[in-house]
Image (cartoon, rainbow, N blue to C red):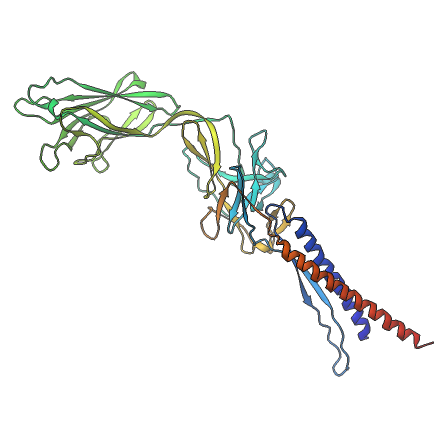
Length: 432
């Protein structure tokens, strides 16, 4: 009977609008929740076919479907904490609920988090979400790990009391030697130069350079003997070279040849020699041939113009930041910066198919498809923004407008039910 189908259709209308009211109330309640993804309820009609030629219409009603719009991104809100992070664009941060790792808590994903270190140095949010990342090697490089598996991810741990140093691996001598020292009648006195370097254990050591001129008999020889001693090895000689300088007008004062006596061979293409020191191997740049940025021989003064090197002494941790590439970097009070972890971004084919859980986290489902771990800013993913949180995607004006529409629709369906009730009462009264 058509009148009964009208009653059923209106009841389905009440249920559908009740579902929409639930999503609206959830959205409004989470208008200030960082990283919240709003939900929407969509309506779909149901059609019940009638017998051909029956001359009556059967109301089918409506059914609702709630969907969480996970792909929507809220506005970024600046904060004062370097470890407050948010994803700008596609991709999600890998997290878990257990400090023991993914194996205990399972892989979860979120788009933002206010991370702080706990009593064990583990980075986690106030709700207990632990940030996951790939640990860096000792030299700061990230190893090659499987990107379709969470097996390489570990909890990010920051030890506030850690110390670290950066050993010296490169040094460049920008030194000018006096051209007059190789001329006839010169004293032939050696010229010493001491340079500090830092060993593998952060110890301060010294390289002793001795430049001894070869005094010419009738003209300037333009030749020097360089002896290099390592204080960490009891001043043992680690390298000895004969340096010849050009006396022509075009390239006057630049290196014309470097002859190895002992130590590492001279690489003319790079202008370097390799030294084996007690504190580890070191690449020393003497300068390329005919290059004025390395060793030179000009005028009558010894001038160590630019002696540069890398490396720092051991320092205490002063700051930890996460850059846009997801690299967790530690800065020490000596100025040394070291990469500790890389935070990848997880992406799935259907992001709206993820299963929503508490605390703005999501889990892989059959509808979402398998995840893949990207470097932040690579592939389809966005970047990681520090000192920021993602705001809620709730639009209060839109939700209040939807609330009015839902209330009117619910009242209208209730009115239809009231009308059907009155019509059925009239039908009942026919018998009287």
